[in-house]
Image: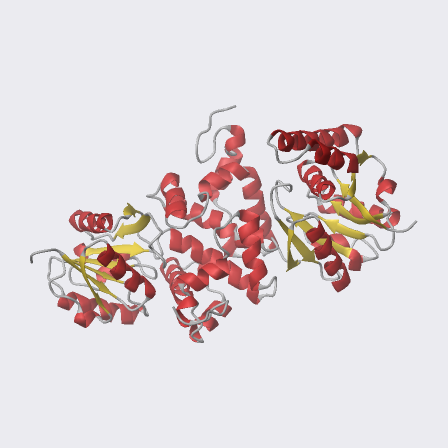
Amino acid sequence: MTIDQSLIGVIGAGTMGAGIAQVAAQAGFETRVYDVSQEFVDRGLARIRSFIQGSKDRGKMTSEEAEGVLGRLKGTLDLAELGAARLIIEAAPEKLELKRDIFQRLEASAEHDTLLATNTSSLSVTAIAAATKTPERVLGMHFFNPPPLMGLVEVIQGDQTSPATMEAGVEIVRRMKKTPVRAKDTPGFVVNRIARPFYNEALRILEDGDVTVETVDRIMKEAGKFRMGPFELMDLIGNDINFAATESLYRAFFHDPRFRPSPIQHRMFLAGHLGRKTGQGFYKYERK
Amino acid sequence: MNANSFAIVGTNRLARELHALCKAKGLRSSHHAEPDSADTSAVLAMETLPGTEAEKRRNLERLEAKLSPSAVIVSSCLGFSATRIGSWTSRPERVVGFATFYPVEEKKVIEITAGLRTREEFIGRTEEFFRQLGKDAVRVKDAPGLVFPRILSLIINEAVRSLDEGVAAAEEIDAALRLGTNYPQGPLRWADQAGLDEVLTVLEGLREETGDDRYRPSPLLKKLVLAGRLGECSGEGFYPYDKPR
């Protein structure tokens, strides 16, 4: 078996996995989405179909194009069906042992020169690659949520990733019509690390008192030109997810005070005030 | 006095821009590089003078000596709380803090703050002044850098650290934040526009005021300021510019 240059494999049919598969299929790649149960696979494919239907309804895609995209997408429960792929992107849950196990199995089932990428946002690419005997072909490809709409992919160089793997990864991201940004394997990579103070310092200012979330949001939008204020954005992201991201960076930087999480956000997380999805966060929302 | 006159004191782009904005709005304003030359008839003096605590203190003393006792002093509190700035003067009740980064032209909102001894009357006159400039003055708690300059300075600091550590190149960092989280511009480009010295002032002020290490400035940021690479205003920062602006 040799590499099929037009084939991309995706591990995991959740929000990120399905989104990445959609991006690949829309860019013209034959795409195989793997998950551990038919139910997960079906749910992921249904999500893609509904997104594509929406694009068709809004006139952003012709029926022909939509058929083409869906024709190139296939779900599977068999890792071997991904074996000849040019690239396999893992988008499994953010658990190091699970990902290390997946990469060992990919190494055994894929061609020796298939690129193996992880879509991790909070784990070390180097730590995942170290589970394989060929870490030079392992890289990070961090897509942003939702992948079909977000233009950026962070292409992450683990300590043992070869320059050729990085070049090939960057090239495929371009073919997927996304903008690649190269970064070294460091906690939070580029975006999650540098954007952290947008949330964290806003929370610190709230802790200092004498100010409302409405005022801070308004200042950041009208004095700062940000599209959303930090509290609105935290409510959109979810205070559980945002808090976990901060905590993970704080741990990864060995408790550097730059990343110290906020007791206010911790309390909101514990209270279940997660934001829009629960109807209550820094603001109140009408339940749909 | 037949019409209220305003004195803008400072040499940075922000001072020049504020003076031009006063003119555009038909206000009587004068621009002074040095506090000693400030218009003695001004009802309100706004200063954006840089410097260490000793330098800024000396500048405030010189400014105060020129102004009438009833004039408002609107002082840039990027690096010091309004309470601290007020403590250098003999009339802290008339000292109001404001904090913003260049440019102000497109901003609807200007942040202002009262020190612990600032009297409401002077806050009201400051709000009125900004209203005449077409800005809504929003009052926040007294701290170096207030809200927007404080948050943006921390984002920039983290971007400069990432650059210094070799995590990614400058253009890539900026592209990542624009595309990955919809920032209106990348943090390093933004730093060049605001002025690296102004960003450093905020970080050092917060570190001094709070004693918290989370504000410690990136060593690269300090070096760039020492090397005179301040951004657009010096012709070079993280990116080169044709000429100083």
